[in-house]
Structures are given as C-alpha cells and as structure tokens.
Image (tube, rainbow, N blue to C red; front, top):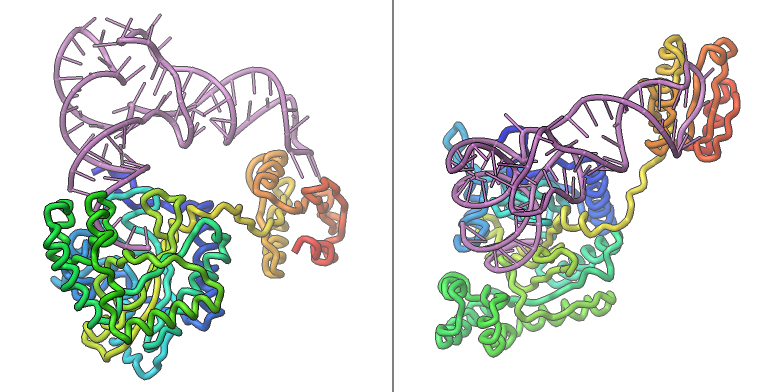
Length: 414
RNA sequence: GCGGAUGUAGCUCAACUGGUUAGAGCACCGGCUUGUGAUGCCGGGGGUUGGGGGUUCAAGUCCCCUCAUUCGCCCCA
C-alpha cells in the first residue's frame, strides 16, 4: 500500500476542475428543471441485490465491476455502479406509484471496479434523468430532447452526435434473440473467442463487437427490426417522427445495443470522437420491465445518464467566476477595522477577500493574481478621517472616499 | 481482467554507450522597495530519480517484482 496517494481510479477534484464539474451539473439541473423534472437523491450504496437483480446476471457490471462488501451487520452492500436501480428501488420503497407520472433528475458519484483510463475512473460522477409511468414514446422524445438541449447548453453541439436504435418490446426481442442465435450458431467458426462466450449469455451484444471477423458476420445477420411486431414498429416510428418534428437529427445504428439487461424499445447514445475509446458521453433508453422485475408495480420507464468527467473534458470554455473585491489593511491597527468592513460588504452581497498576509506589495500582487476587480485600502491616515482608498484594479485609478458612501461607490463592481 | 507505452523538483523537461555533489525553465519564498500590481537584478527552499529487491568497484541509466499513469481490448457514462 502506498499511503498519501489516492486509491487507484479515484482523484481529488481541485478547484479548477471542480468549477467545470459544477458547470456541467448545474446546467443539467437547470435544463431538467425547465423540462419539469424534480431532483431526487438516493444513497450511494444499496443492498447488493438491488443491483444484481436488476442489471442482469451476465452483465459485466455485476460480474466484475461492483464494489461489494459486507458491513458490520453482515449485510452485503454495494456502492452504486449506476443510478437507475437505486431510483427504481426508491420508487417502490416510497410507494410513489400514486404520483405517476414522475420525472426525476439526479446527480452524484458512481463506482465501478474497472481499469482506469482517461474519462474512466473507479469513482466517477453522473447526472441523469428518469421518466416513470409513461408508456408512450412521448417520454422517450422528451428525454432525448432534454439531453440534446443540455449538451447544447454546455457548448457541445458539433462534436457530439446522436445514435438511435430500438430493441423492440419484450416479445419482439425474444423472437429476435432466437433468430440471431440460430444464425450465429451457423457461423460459429468465424466468431471471436469473446463473442463465442457472448453467444451463450447475451448474443445481442455481438452486434456491436469491434472485432473485424465478427463485423463481417454481423453485417449479414438478421436485422433486429425484421422481427418487430406491430407494437414495436409503431413505437419506433412515432419516436422518430417526434424527433424529426423537433429538429433533432440522429443516425439509426442498427447495431446499437445497451449493455444493461433491462432495456426495451428505445436505446440511444450521444458520442464524441474526442475522447478515444471512451466516446460515449450520454446514454440511455427505455426499461419497461425493470420495476416489476424488482417486485414493484408494472411501471414503464425511460431515462439516461451522462458522465460528468467526460463532459468536463470536452468543455473548452473558460469558467468565469465573479471577480472579488479585496480589503487590504495597512498596519496592524487597521486589521480589526478591515475585518469589520469585510463582513459588512459580504453581508451586502459582495464577494470579498481580506488581504492579510505579507507586506503591502505582496497583498496587492496576490489580489491581482486572484483577478480582483477593486481594492480597498485601510490605513492609519485614512482611519482617523473615516475614509478609505478605493482602487480600480483594471485602470489603476485610486480615490479617497468616505466609509459611509462606500457601498454607493461599489455599485459598479457588484 | 488482457496487451503495449511511460514514471526524474509543484509543472514541463535535461543528464553521451552505467562514471564526481542529479540540472534548467516556469512556479514558490525572501531582498533591492518597512503605504501600492510591472519589468529587472540578487538570494533561498525544495528530489530517498514512484516504491522494493538484484547485477556492478559504481545504477536516474541494466534486470526482476510492485505501485501509479496512459493508449487499446473488454465493458461502459
């Protein structure tokens, strides 16, 4: 063990980085708020079953990526690897079916035991939304529209693109599953080792394999949509039409498959080419079977989650913060008076720093480095006359003003 | 979990095929200037060369292990 180092895959988020995360999270919340969503916060750990039962026994998240441990009460606990399962649990625990339809926004840390890479950490952060209780594509359209607006709001427009697919309803999906298995079983010899394993557990995933041999086989495989029943077809058609009407362009990727087992109908991803292998920046879909599978009432749902780290990496705007005013006492005697003035200005809504270390030159220099907009000097010669010196840090102009009229003079800096 | 690359000061990097006390720029601290932001000049603190072991008269340099980062695979946000 190497103490004094963060645990692998975790990191300290220093102020500069923190500002970027904040911008992403606040933009997500503001946009979601505008779309009529309310924030929900669920615990960052749950009983292990909450995840193992919902994410599917074959998913990588469950089989190798969960942070699971036993607590002192001998319960098996897991740090949440994603947000939806916990929210579904909260929905059931709190009897929220009476309030349907529900629109939730959430944000916070998630944990997956993976090998870290750029844009992939063991502790990472997501923002996400869920719409519960709406069985029609209106919810899917709203979810996707919200996602797009959010991404645009943080300045991501040209470097992300939307891929869309439908997995069909449960009946269509299982009909297709059989057809696909048959086809792939006849082409076993060309499949990669990995895909041979996937053939047993979840053949759908072979569709988006990156292996070249697999790709050739997949190209001629039966198409998901050819197995769709009327319901599945109508649903997808309605979704596409809705997106078209809102001017949201997308690419229909027939091989887009979401990793988690609980998805049906809609699956979508916003991806970028700027992050290497971690190109998925926001992804989601419909999960009509999830809540009932957990033991709750039959409740349709659709939602998405976005990776805050990944989005922050794409942000190229500088974060502007409010420029502070600094109060600088000159000489020891002025210090308590400066403290009182600082407090007074803060209570009046100004962002105020107190320059209290180093000589005067240092204090001004430091204020300058902190992008201060104005400096207020308080020294003995001013103090006796009940005035201060106010200096505009951009122009360098300095004038003497009375303490009483200070706020009035500071209006322009507010 | 699998494969490749990389770890030298807070940051970016240097140190010829192993050879004196591991250097530089930036940053930081102090002074020239004990009541005013710059530039300049002078000075200062900083490193068990990621960690451990080995080879050698001698290791930042070579070998092994380990930790971390990074790129890809897997998977995913």
